[in-house]
Image (tube, rainbow, N blue to C red; front, side, top):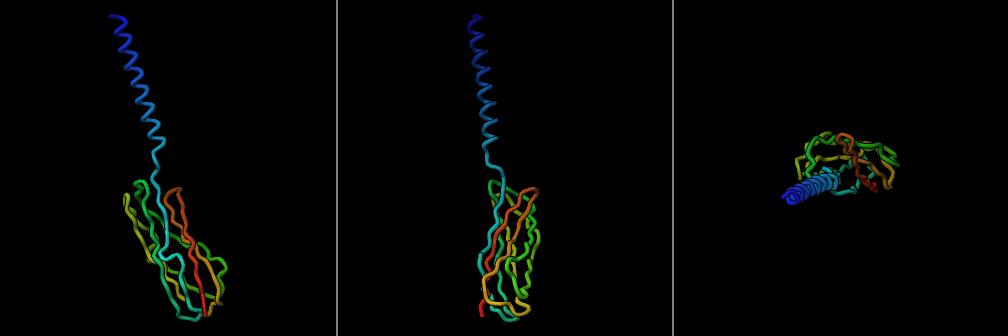
Length: 141
């Protein structure tokens, strides 16, 4: 009888250890909630003269059940000459689990811009997590 009790106790103990180990490992391996940012389209065309305009959608998509407030900002444009005005219609997006939210980035030429390719980065931040998307701006005559 004693061997049977010890045997049952050992099986219960091993089962508990295996369960706890599996649960800990599953929690460790489970993907963390996150988000991604994209632009549609990720390249825009502008004429080099004053008054030319275009827009692109900035999309923030939930990954692995992420939900929360995401701040959107523009980083300094690279190689920009002349004067292009940038405007986001929202600087904060609320993303639901496994959903997406979007805002619009408008571009307007306010004075002559030489023909060429330029870039602007749109940065999305939530807590310590930050992602960005680079948008190509092609200016032509």
